[in-house]
Amino acid sequence: MQIKDSFVIKAPQNKVWEFLFDIPKLSQCVPGIEAVEVVDEKTYRGKLVVKVGPIKSAFSGIVTLTEVNVPNRIAGTVEGDDKSSASSVKAFFTGTLKTVEGGTEAAFEVEANLRGRLAQFGGPVITATAKKLTAEFAKNLRAQLEK
Amino acid sequence: MTVIKFLEPTDFSEAVSLLDQHADDAKIIAGGTSVVLMLQQKLIAPSVLISLGRVSNYDFIRYEEDGLHIGALTKLSDIERSDIVKKFCPALAHTFSVVGNVRVRNQATIGGNLSAADYAADPPAMLVALAARVQVIGPEERREIPLSEFFLGFYTTALAPNEILTEVIIPALPSSTRAAYHKYTSISAEGRPCVAVGAVVDFDSDGKCLDLRIAVGAAVETPQRVKDAEAMAHGHTLTDELAAAIAEEYSLRLDPLSDVRGSAWYRRETIRVFVKRALEEVRHGDR
Image (tube, rainbow over the protein chains, first blue to last red):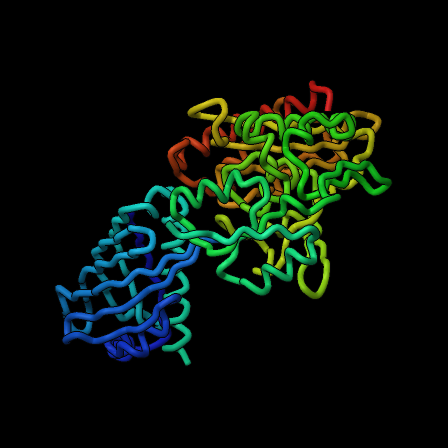
């Protein structure tokens, strides 16, 4: 599944970039995130709880940055699994920042693959849930940066 | 093997208090057609099941002055076969007759069907078009929720975690009202719909539309009406051209999803076809 989105944050690009690397602050913006740990400058470990109606899943995983191009672009992978539903997710993501009138345009692209029992749930539910999470993340990010 | 505790309260207040007590560890089960599947697929793992099987007096179908009242624990097959429902709105009886198959309908309850909020279900679209509302009970109070505000998303309703749906009310229909439910299945006849259309039209003495409501379900996350499209009919005769124009507006304005029953593109095309067909049925059919 592929998700693409972009939005403008009313803040200067450098400030946005710094925020993206402030892991405690950034992780507060991710809905359902629990327990983020910095392993090294390119690797982070964490737990993400996602609920869809009665179905709750908790993914434990690792985010690895493969590309860090200050202050314009990051790219990386996310790999995680939820033992209780025997499901795993692997995703590739890229995020770019660009100075535009009014602030910074943040664009991201995620290519994710869900396997296991949750995957049988059905495409639209997974896509809609992923879109809701990313939309909420964007909203929280803007709220933090535009304070 | 984990043993699940199976509790059997005898009334809704007891059920609510058990639900409140066990919270996230518990799941309500009525007919079980949704819950047992989820348990088998290991999508949920409650340690407690609160069965409504012993709650009495809530499997009723009554016609009252303000409309049709159906208890939450009424089986879909009883609604399908009820003379009261057939008299009130044949299209509603028809809606329940096409859910899954006879074995499912003999077990499943209307309360469970609505509470599960499966986007690909039949009753929601027809009930939303009929302006139905639900009564729910919580630890402190009972309240009513219009069905149009009940479905919030995939498998998500406006029910608080400690609330249970107790009754469905469909407001009385003027005798000049006709309704139709059209279920389009793209894979198997007893499967979930690809597109579900519930249409309700009230005609004046000249045959012009006084009111028109169309809810599309199964192709979208929650049953949707397009009020601008419905308004196109007010004061006009429901001609072929008007039906086509309304259907076109629905296909343009809704944002269909893709799943195993059809892509978003395919659904846009079939929404156009089946909204029109539902309106044709309303015109020519017999309620």
